[in-house]
Image (cartoon, rainbow, N blue to C red; front, side):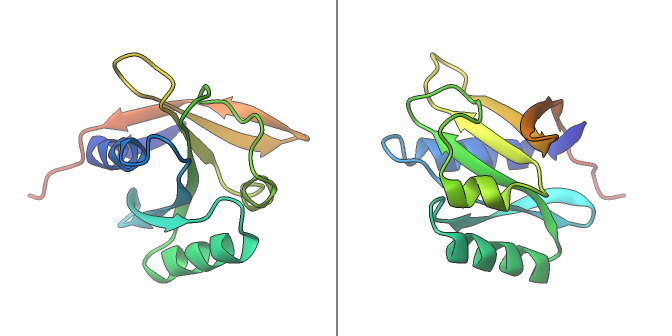
Amino acid sequence: MLVLPRTTAIELMHAAQLSPQHAIAGVLGLRDGMAAGLTPSAADDAQALACARSQAREQGGEFALYYSQPAAAAEPHDLPRALREAASDLPLLIVSLNTKGVLETRAWRWRDDQYIEQTLTAIEPPTAA
C-alpha cells in the first residue's frame, strides 16, 4: 500500500490541472519518511527524468514517479518509453484528467513484465506535538 499525505495528493492533482492539454511528469520526493514535493520533468526525456530523480534523492529521497493523462484513464497505457524505463524500480502514480468532477489518481508498480495496481491511500499528515 502506498500512503500519501492528503496535502501532497492535492498538490499532485493541482499540478495536473494546471496543464489540462499536456501531460506532466516528474518525481514525488520523500521528506521525513513521507511523500512530499514534486520535481517536474519531461516524461519523454530519459536524461531529464534521471536528473529529476537525482534532485529528489539529494532533497531527501524518492517516493514515486508521477504522470498525468489529460485524455485517458489513470492506467499505464501508451506511456512514453523514458517514463516506462524510469518507473521500473519506483511506483508510478497516474492522474487522469479524463473524469467528471473528482480527479482520479491510481498507483502502479512494474512486476513480472506488467504493471500491477497498488492500493493508494491519502491520509491527514501527522501534526507536530
